[in-house]
Amino acid sequence: MFRGRLVASHESPARLEHVLAELRRRPLGELREPALDETALMPAVRAVHEPRYLDFLRTAWDDWVALDPANADLDALPSVWPLPNRHGFRQDGWPDNIAARLGQFAFDSGTPLTAGSWRAALGGAACALAAAQAVLAGERGAFALTRPPGHHAGPGFCGGYCFLNNAAIAAQALRDGGHARVAVLDVDYHHGNGTQTVFYERADVLTLSLHGDPRTEYPFFLGHADERGAGAGEGFNRNWPLPRGTGLATWRAALDQALQAVSDFGATALVVPLGLDTFEGDPISGFRLRSADYAGIGAALASPGLPTLFTFEGGYAVAEVGVNAVNLLEGFER
Ligand code: Q9C
Ligand code: ZN
Image 1 (spheres, rainbow, N blue to C red):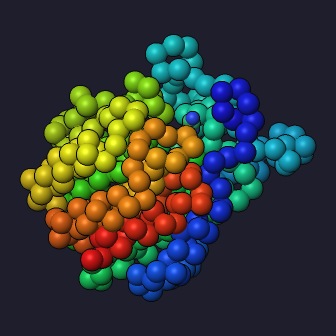
Image 2 (image 1 turned 120 degrees about the vertical axis):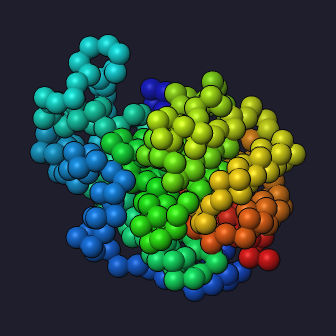
C-alpha cells in the first residue's frame, strides 16, 4: 500500500538475488546458509523484541486467514491504528481481532505480511547471528545477506518492510559474546528508527544514523538531530538528517563525523545496517551517490579497524543493488 494504492512491493526477492549473483562474480569469502532452528534462535530474538510482539508475528498470518478464508489471497495489512496521545492507547486490554492487532504493531500500511513472513524474518535473525558468530570467532568482516530487511523494526513494532531487527539482534549478540562497546552505524537512506528505539536508553550500544531528513522523508516521525538518547543512554544516539539531493561530498562529511563518534566511543565492534537506497538511481529515495562512490565508502567504514558486521537493508534499484553492495564490501576488504 502506498498513498492509497496497492502497488508491487519495492522490497522484492530479486534484490537479494542480484547481490548474491554479484558476490559469486566477485567473491569476497565463503558463502554460508545458516540453519533455521526457531527454538535455538528465539533467545537472541527475545533479547531485542517484546514477547507480545513476537506472539503477534508468529500467528499473524494464520489469524488473518482465520478472519476470512478469502484473506489467504491478500497480504495482511493494517487499516486502523491507536494513537498514543488520543483515544484508545493503553498498556493492556488490547483487542484480539487481527485487524486491530495489525494496527497495534505495524506503524505503516506498506509492510505486507504474508504466509512466509515469520519464517523469512527468522531466517534474517539466523543470518545476523551467524555473522555475529563469525565476527566473534575472529573474522574481520561478515555480511548478513538477508531479506526482508530489519532496521525499521523496534522492540514491539514492524514497518518499512521490516519485522525483526537483524542489526540489533547482531549488535546484542556481539555484546553478549564479550564486546564491551558496540557501535551501530546505519547508512540506509531511511532513518534506522527501530534500531534507535531498541538501544535508546543504553550506553553500551552507540547508535548512529545518516539519512534523509524526516521532515520530508520516510519514516517521518523519528531521526531528527536532537534525538540524542535518554536516561543512561543520553549522548549515545546521534542522527545526521540530510536533505533530498545530497551527493557524495556532503554525505561523506557526515560519515566522517559518525566515524569520529565511533572512535570517541571506543567501540570494540561495528555493525553497519547497509542500505544501498542512497544510490542516485533508487526509485523511492533522494540522495545522489554513484556506483563508483561505494568503494570509497567501504574503505572509510574499514578505517576504524574494527570487526565489522554488515546487514542488508534497503536498496531498490534492483539491477544495480548487487554491484553497489559488492563495490562497498570490496572497498572494505582492500
Ligand atoms: N515513496 C527500507 O529501506 N515506503 N525501508 C516509502 C516512499 C517505505 C524503506 C515510499 C520505505 C521503506 C529498509
Ligand atoms: Zn531504506
